[in-house]
Length: 258
Ligand SMILES: [Zn+2]
View 1 (cartoon, rainbow, N blue to C red):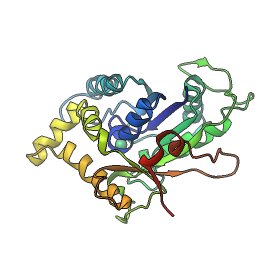
View 2 (cartoon, helix red, strand yellow; view 1 turned 90 degrees about the vertical axis):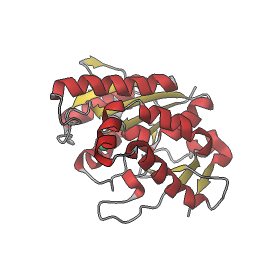
View 3 (tube, protein in one colour; view 1 turned 45 degrees about the vertical axis):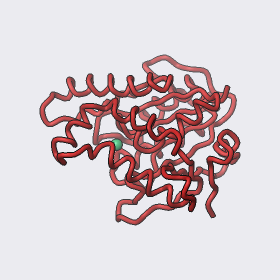
View 4 (spheres, helix red, strand yellow; view 1 turned 135 degrees about the vertical axis):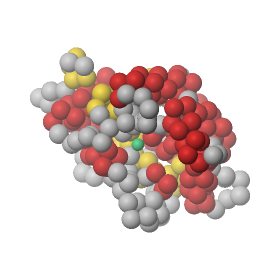
């Protein structure tokens, strides 16, 4: 059974950017594991860091459970995710435990440092996951090296725009119209964040924004039948697998753009 591992910075980033595709892969028989670098410890105006972290770990776990996916919080702190030896060893420990065929992470063009550090941190452990002399562990428990490197996909940045506000193109676009309600249910598991935004906006901006961004990416399909989509860009640098696992798994739901 092929396995996909999504590694994003904060609880709810996966749900915003790639949960629809995870649902489709799950239904196509894939194993799915979801991981967040932090527990979202700055995600509250009222609760302490420890208290909101407990709440948000639970919310992220509930979203993963809804999908039948595993969930790991890598234990870093909000706003201080750093590309260093510790972060690379911890992420590599996770990769060696999950042993994914495909890893999905943030776009390096995303709007904030936690989001742009994460793909750097993920990329090298993916490369090093097969190297026996590279020591890596999660929670102090070393895992044996992988037999092959996973392919890497960068998801759309938040709002499909870069830090200067320009719309970022995707290379692969996945039609998630059939599963957008499931994606919405996963996102709704993050009730602490949803209620915060609802209080600010007076409407359910949390879910509405996800649908708006997914509808924006669907425009790239140029088909009235496709109302919601998620975009991805493969990492095709030296040494990384270049096979298009998404199209192989999801067929016509995936459109390749020039
Ligand atoms: Zn985030």
